[in-house]
Every structure is written in C-alpha cells, then in structure tokens.
Image (cartoon, rainbow, N blue to C red; front, top):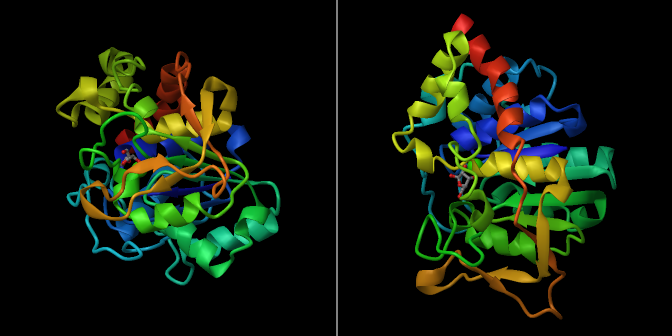
Length: 300
Ligand code: BDR
Ligand code: CA
C-alpha cells in the first residue's frame, strides 16, 4: 500500500492504524501540502512510523503547493508536530513523493493500493507523468469530498478537495476502475468520543496520561473527527461500509470551487462513495495502535 498524507493529527492516527496492521504492507508514504507544509508533513509521518516501530517504510516529501491556485495551509502552526516532534532524519532530499509513488506502482504493478489522506496534488502529478497509472494500480481510496452535506473548508467544499480542486478533478477523470471516496458525510461521524477514544484518555497511568495529551489538545474533543483513520480502516476492510456508485466531478469555477457533484455517467467511471460504515470496533483498534507509538514518545 502507498499512502499520501498531509500531516494532520488524523493523518497520524491513520498511519498508526496502518503500521499496526500487517495487512497494510506499507511500501511508500508521501507527503503533500494541506494541513501543514509538505516538508513538515513528511517529517511528522516519518516520526509517527518511527514511534510505531515501522522503520523500513520509505517516506518522501511531495508537492509543496497546489497545481494552479496559491498555497493555503489549514493548520500552519502544525499541532501534530508540536505533539510528537518531527525530528526524524529519514526523509531523503533526493526522492520526491510523486516519483516514489510511480516506482511503487511499477514494482507492484496491478497490486498496489493507494490511500490519499490529503489534497490530491501528488496523485494528479503522477498521472501527468504517467497517464497509464490507472492500469498499474489495483485500488485508490481517497478521503475527501462533501457529498450530500455542507463542507468543512467552504459551505460546499471539503478540505482535501478544496486545497487543490484542479488535482482532484484530474484524479476523478483519470479512469481509475476501482476508486473509493470516503467523504466527509461519513468521516464527520467518526469522532473521538463516538469511537470511544475517551476511554484511552480516562484510563489510569501512562496510557491515560498520553491519551489525554493526545486527545485533549483539541479543545472540542467531542467534535474531534478522525477522518483519515476511517478511510484507512475502510481500505483495510472494504466491507465495513456500504457504497453508492456514481461518476463525480469537481466544480472549478466560482464560489463552489472545490465542490464535488455528479458527473455525466457516459463521461466518467463510477466512484464507490462510502456511506453507512460500521465503525464499532474501530475505536478499540485505534486505542491499541496508538498506545504503542504514543507511549514510546513519553518514555523519551
Ligand atoms: C481532511 O482534511 C484534513 O484536514 C484532514 O486531515 C482530513 O484529511 C478532512 O476534511
Ligand atoms: Ca489529512
């Protein structure tokens, strides 16, 4: 599996979940602008993997800015970096996340799953460099889009799409035969409290201490949605969700720029849009996955 992420706390939850699950078989992790700068997101991802004991997965820095529009960071103060530190030394300067993704797709031709947890700039650039990429990739899972609900970046746009709508439109129109969208409609429901992560914070000893620190730095804990971890869980267990299938496109003009809307079914392959996921059990898996890496941080 190749993962592309933008350095948010929920991106870290997703990486911790994947690092703890042997089915994930991580072969490449890339970073992209979005929550924070791509470079910070790469260092944080490497740090999370290090803390999780996953030392061999290569991490590379990807696109520093969107394809067309100016850079807009959601969390320039880098709450994840402040929490875990970002001093990992294993982000090579001479490998870019786009090249790394393409190399992984060629090496694992027909078998690679790609999980995107941030803006789609890297995947769009990979498609520009290698238009045959959809034939090399087994499956793509994208956390992004607000399907039937309002957005979290604008009234109609979800953050990962809004940070680079042009890239998202390239990806949706690229002809991936097995593309799943895990939209805000679903992930907004997966809050820390609903998933039971408050048990982590409420428990005693070291576990409780680190749990409280991890979760409580978000002042609105009940509303703290763990978007990307849900997308990771759905990639690992597709049957957790039910799906609606339809072609989608991204609006690129006007006040609704970044909104996903249905596309002409003749012009687009259908996307599997996840909904109605059974998330019971995910909280427990997340608690287990987080306990190792987070506890390790506190021992230092
Ligand atoms: C998405 O936007 C980012 O801020 C989160 O990490 C997640 O990937 C949610 O809209
Ligand atoms: Ca993210």
